[in-house]
Length: 256
Length: 306
Ligand SMILES: Cc1cc2nc3c(=O)[nH]c(=O)nc-3n(C[C@H](O)[C@H](O)[C@H](O)COP(=O)(O)OP(=O)(O)OC[C@H]3O[C@@H](n4cnc5c(N)ncnc54)[C@H](O)[C@@H]3O)c2cc1C
Ligand SMILES: Cc1cc2nc3c(=O)[nH]c(=O)nc-3n(C[C@H](O)[C@H](O)[C@H](O)COP(=O)(O)O)c2cc1C
Ligand code: FES
Image 1 (cartoon, helix red, strand yellow):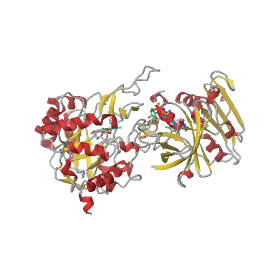
Image 2 (cartoon, helix red, strand yellow):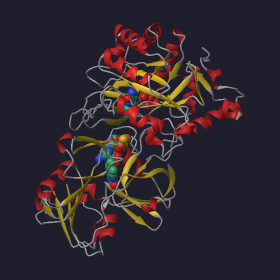
Image 3 (tube, protein in one colour):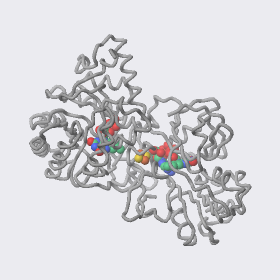
């Protein structure tokens, strides 16, 4: 656990925020897909919320780490009260990361809602290497489409909302019909599962899984993802993930 | 060194450098923590509950946070006792800390067989979990039925030759002191209390339980006052030592458990929030004892004034 200083905590819209926090030189080595955990209340002696919450490293700005978060319950609500120079407890880097040593590849990035969070950093690492990148980005309504200014360098952006308030009306997975060599997917489980059905069979798929976590470091076995390997295997989302081969995940065993 | 001595305690003939044990299910098999804390500094480690065969555990979701607490229904997922003894224990033994093997079974025969294997291994103590509320097939009846508790304790005690047996009690009973007494009479060398409290949480949008197993066990600061009360009741009715646990977050919580009769304590859910918690508590306890000029923490055991 380390103490970090809030550099800024900006409201994007009613539900989405972006927050920059000071980081150690170790944390600044974050790779796209890595996550950190935050104690979301200022005072460490406050026991509600009790556990730390997980957030993807969204971007790195100078000596700071940026996270993008959506207000869900008491933990993320608590984050919105933080102001410049407040101190919070952080831990991480945690988890594995997306394969970002790619050149000359046709790449799809597929995001649902807050699933966009890890992708600004990923795109930073993938552009300028002759990669061709399509971004597919779906949400319930226009407020779920954020951070578009971070994706100026991708080749195409496809946007859908379920109510049609931004982009095309419908589900983002309905618009995937090109062939890719690798796809990176982050969003609700049903959306990730459907992306896999829609992508061409030769496409490698890396998904970022969001399971509830108590510890984030492999102690509790609360965050299990089943993988179809030689035999069915229990993997820990926090330690073995959160990035998994999407074709091996046993989606039926996940609640959502 | 003099300072360290203040925290040294002896439990069932086994010396502990300090009275803080990492609770079963909250520290993996210990090794998961080695990159985060110096395991040589904790008094002991109680590993994830072991069974005869590997166990895959419950479906997801397995955990949910509630007010100042955590409900879990992991379902006792574990690698199995043989894999633990052969592939994990040798590395764990490299640390200078007391190794406690938490174990369970679905039948008395399974309990006995796991206990036999562990007794012959390099672990230091056995901790029998009779109280896990998560497994439909067993667990619950052993810990909440006096006859069952006596049977399993007697049978396991008979097979064990070398190692002390801790019986970890379920709080999901009317009068926990009678269960402690029954365990003592059936040969238990030590009692640990409490395990998690049967609990439930519902999603009001989907109308569904928030964990797949429907019910689970509540841990964390929410259960501390209940745990303290239970240790208090147990202490008055038995003569074997007690390991107190349930919701310990800081050194003040530890002291409460000592005052009602604990000889040693375990830290569970607090490890999830910060794996350094146990080490911070050790330092804070030293300061407290120095302040109060107490030579050894054992002097506080059972010193509640009522
Ligand atoms: C690896 C990983 C990366 C993540 N990255 C981001 C991110 O960049 N931005 C972002 O906004 N969110 C992210 N999430 C989800 C975020 O952790 C949850 O939205 C947050 O924990 C909700 O907490 P709460 O107290 O506001 O909600 P509550 O519903 O009150 O939380 C109750 C419990 O459920 C857990 N929980 C609730 N929703 C989720 C969820 N979707 N995933 C995991 N646990 C959940 C909480 O951690 C908490 O233990 C990530 C999750 C994981 C596992
Ligand atoms: C995720 C989780 C897993 C647990 N697994 C076990 C177990 O395998 N065996 C056992 O005896 N107790 C198990 N417990 C219970 C704890 O060891 C402890 O008794 C309980 O959590 C109360 O202490 P705490 O409030 O400090 O966590 C588990 C608890 C949690 C939270
Ligand atoms: S969150 Fe505890 S094991 Fe993954």
